[in-house]
Image 1 (cartoon, one colour):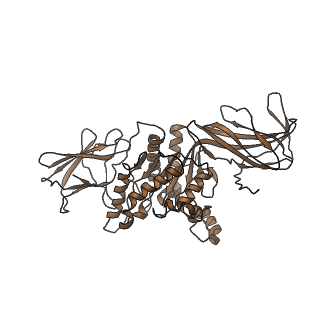
Image 2: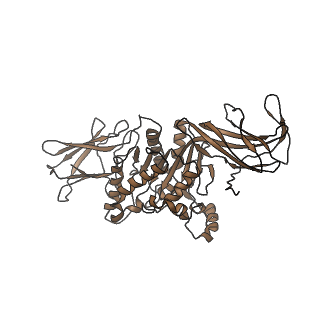
Length: 490
């Protein structure tokens, strides 16, 4: 029987020895008996269940003379579990399960014991984690395009399932498209992949993203190990992510993502999403809202979690000389509206980001975005009720003369930062003319006040952050900016 073997450099040793009266192994000489681990591999993260537990599948090949009871245990800095018998080794192959491992970081030890307890073959895999898996999907800003000299540093307890279907400690860059097992990700013809992979590993200078800062913040806040499943692919549209293409598996983006999730057990904690740039055109923008609903609904169905947390970025700035930003702004407005279209979703504004080029966030802003997404993950997935969405437009109130407008803001963490000259807004009347005003934040810390030079007609519309590269300055106490919105009827 052929088995897919993923060997990640496990810490493997074989010993011949005996068991002393305390159940400890006495390592006295090397044996010719061998075990080669297939699963688990170092730095793998298993998705925990609602009871904070997970089952670890143990799979290995062995030399023919390795026969006997297979025992396993987990060793942590605080304790050593008792050895559990999980099956018997025979015929050079074993698969079994270590059940109900609790959340945490471990060294997994496996041994084969003969009937007479006279010989032992021993292997250890270190570290292995029970924690949470998060999907990283979307296009290039989810891949990461910041300079690597500014990238977040790796940390044990944050792992990545890379596109080559290999686990390792998460280290920037996380996305290596040509190393993917899925042809949909390849950027060169198959015969050129090996050279492209070598060149990328040798020459790459950009690729810092939001995933590693996100995961490090969750680990710091919760103590739960985090595994990131990299699925993003730059320049891709919602039509390319169509769930209806899942049957194409590795030849479709959605199919490749679901293949990885199923390979890792079929369950995840949540999904991070940064996409929309490729849909900022009149035809695609008109279908964006419905496609987003279909996409999230399909993902939740395919992972059997109808409340799977889904956290996504609102489009940022774009250094584009074209005068018409209507499709770009429509995507931003559809992204804001999506928060009300489905439960357990959260949008993270990026309109204040600094850029590494015309359309990609730099490493610093990727780090900020990762922290903002982590805050929303704490709210949606970890029950932190004290975390709010960030500033959103709520409702408006006019004075009787319609010369003063109060915009009430919801979702504020703390209060709005006091600003005497608010920027980033404009108001259009029905004829398209813009009216001059002076704006400032209210003393209550939850409003923006507008003072107009003349009465404003009843069919006017308010915008915030319109255009490709607006200047905005309304933020809450956590530094989260007011989301781009408009048109808002006022």
